[in-house]
Length: 496
Image (cartoon, rainbow, N blue to C red; front, side, top):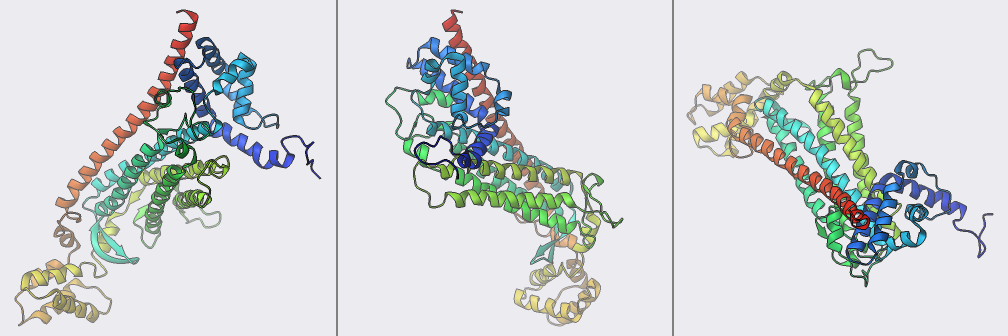
């Protein structure tokens, strides 16, 4: 039986093995850099506010500079400290003395440190998935432009429905990716708020400057209310919801691509670089990467949903349910999503599209007959109900064998003596090219409607690229500002 009772030593072996050691490993992987950035920023702020003597603050900065991050990352958990925070505190005390190092913790708590780290790591994950989705979008925009006139069937209920173009189809998913980007940008503004200074949950009596640490850590705003800064989890739930929505759409698009890759469809052929062979069937060209895309997207979706589920019905307070064990699941969801998107982009950029097969299918299977009914309405003034009935009877008479010439003859016979319309007009309506060309209202597949949308989408992607560059620049600038402030502080202390 394991030691227990008042004489037992912390940590209990089972607690160390099941919680503390895995949490320490996760913290080294995800939080070390953010934690040290917070140490620098908070120490600089304490000195600036005269809460900590400048000489001691400079000594702490130098101690932070001397830490060997690779050595820290390779450290094994031995139970002599509770977590990474206390491990680093001991390291710093060894360098600049326990009394001086201990002053770095004035006017802060592990609570606000943790929430600050979580937001710093999450904003990076948001930018990473944003970039991956943007790169996929840029590839699809160029494909849509290249194939803006390439005819293909549109499907409803998994059945060929009407002719459209490949450009029109791709623009449908591109618009989803645009909405994904908008949602990610909006969530970034809510994530990128500084909770540091909330301390345990009610702030502090020290005259700290939260706006200064906000600037040094690259945050846009303060997470103002200290209780909410510590207790609220909506920022992470929102991000996971956005990620799940994005992966849902990505999976549906990938499912189409897998279907197109079948021999029966033959719309899509992956390059040899993305094809895996069978160990027994010499003829097989398996589109396995698309299956990896699909399963990674599904994993990310359910990991993101699991985060929300784990947070449901938890107290509105500081609690571990939202911390050590949960945060890695958030990052795993984003990492899996990024892998999925990057892989899909690689596959799509290198694949061949069989537009001849698509065009042939668009002109078959009775797909253009909706336009024939529309043409009867426009040319004769009959009701659509009547036109639909005439075309339906003609389709049934052909008994599933599509022959546009025969269909035109049947319709001509049906309207003869009742309406005036030429056979040439009837036959011309049974063309996929004509079907697309007349659908020129906003959102339609006709070239004059589609081309401006692709141009707009290209411009929107460029604009979104600028947003990403601005965010990256702001974070890099904040990091440099910390370094500059450290140098200034040490220069003041050393007299140069």
